[in-house]
Length: 103
Image (cartoon, rainbow, N blue to C red; front, side):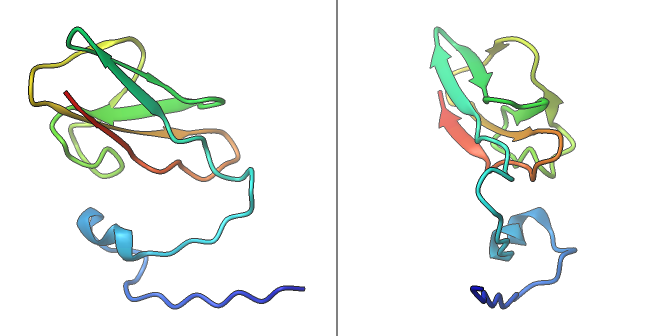
């Protein structure tokens, strides 16, 4: 079979701002779909196929680590200049990448 070697520069318990340095190899179909953020008339709509839960922030912080994150359930009212970030969780899959959209 194929051999893949990963070298990590950080351990698994790093701050969120350093988490981009962690490399994970996943098989196709084992990662939740990255959310799609649509903004219209100062309302943000977030969707992700097969997601169990979508978490988001509107202050530009990373929703994977922010205490300001909220579970998405309906369109969110945002102000001019807000940055919406979201990621999805799905049962039996790794969490998705973070989607970003500015108003």
